Amino acid sequence: MQRIFSGIQPSGVPQLGNYLGAIRNWVNLQDDHECVFCLVDMHAITVWQDPAKLREHTLTQAAILLASGIDAERHILFNQSAVSAHARLAWIFNCVSRLGWLNRMTQFKDKAGKDRENHSAGLYVYPNLMAADILAYKATRVPVGEDQKQHLELTNDIAQKFNHDYGVEFFPQVEALIPPEAARVMSLRDGTKKMSKSDPSAQSRIELTDDADTIALKIKRAKTDADVLPSDPSGLVNRPEAKNLVSIYAALSGMSIQQVLNLHQGQGFGPFKTALTEVVVNEIAPIALKTSQLLQDEAHLVQILHNGAQRAQAIAEPIVMEAEKLVGFIKSA
Image 1 (cartoon, rainbow, N blue to C red):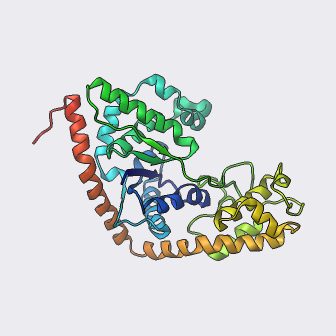
Image 2 (image 1 turned 45 degrees about the vertical axis):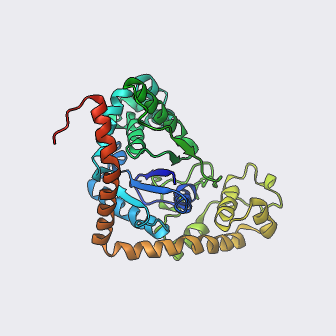
Image 3 (image 1 turned 90 degrees about the vertical axis):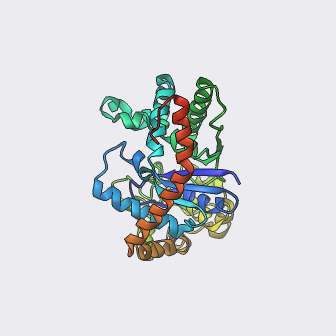
C-alpha cells in the first residue's frame, strides 16, 4: 500500500468545511493506504497561539479525528512537535529551497497581505516544513485541496534538487491526491466567504463539537434570502446563501444538488432549514458526542499521541538520519 501523509493544524475546533473537505476523506483512505495523520502544531505557531489553547486544541483535534473514524491502531496519529525529524529535515530543506521559489507561494501572500514585513519567518518558510513533514516518511501520496497544490509542487522541486545536489535518488516524487469534489462550505452569516474556524463569530460555522441543539439554532439563524428554493441549480445563481445551504445538504446526504432541489423545490427556507438540520445533526452530533466522551480522559488521548509519535519516529528517524549523512553531518553514536 502507498503511504499517505496528512496534516491538520490544531489552531481551533474543526468545522463542517474541514470535515467535508478533509477529515471524511481521510477516514475513507484508511482502507487501502498506510496513513500517517499528523496534528501540525509546529505549523500552527507560525502565527501567535496561546500556549494553553494550543494544548487544548491539540487534544480536542485528536479526539475529533478519533470520533470521526480515524483508526489510531491500524494507522498513525501524533502531534508534529513530538518527532524531531520534522524540524531537522525542515532545516536542511530551508537550505535546499530557493528564495525565488518561496516568493512565488501565493498562500503567504494571501495571509500576509500588505503587512508581510511583520509576519514570522516561520510563516514564510512554512512550505519547506510541509515538504519535510511529507518526505520524512517518504510518503508518495498527499491528500490536498486546491489551495495546497502549489506547496506540493514545491515539495517535489525540493526533493528533485536534493537528489540532484547530492547525486542520489533518495526522496520520491509525491502525488497530489485530490479528494472527490467536496462542497465548498461557506459561512452561515455570509455566503460569499468560506466557513472558517478563525471567524470571530461562532454563528458562522458548524463546529464538530456542536450538539444537536446548537446545530439547530445555528441553522435557524443562518442567513438566507426571501425567495423559495428553485427547481434547477441555475436558480441558485447569485443566491450565495441559498446555494450554500443546498450544497451542505447535498454533501452530507450523498445527493446531487439537483436531487435536493427535486425534493424541496418551491419551499421557503423555514421547512428547508428543518430538513437540513436533521441531515447535519445525523452526521455531526454523533461525532460531537464521541469527542466529548474521549475528552473526559485526557491522559488516554495523550497516550494515543505518544504511541503514535513513537511509531512515526521509527519510520522517520532512519530516513532523516540518512539525509543528514548525505548532507555531510557527523552523527554521534
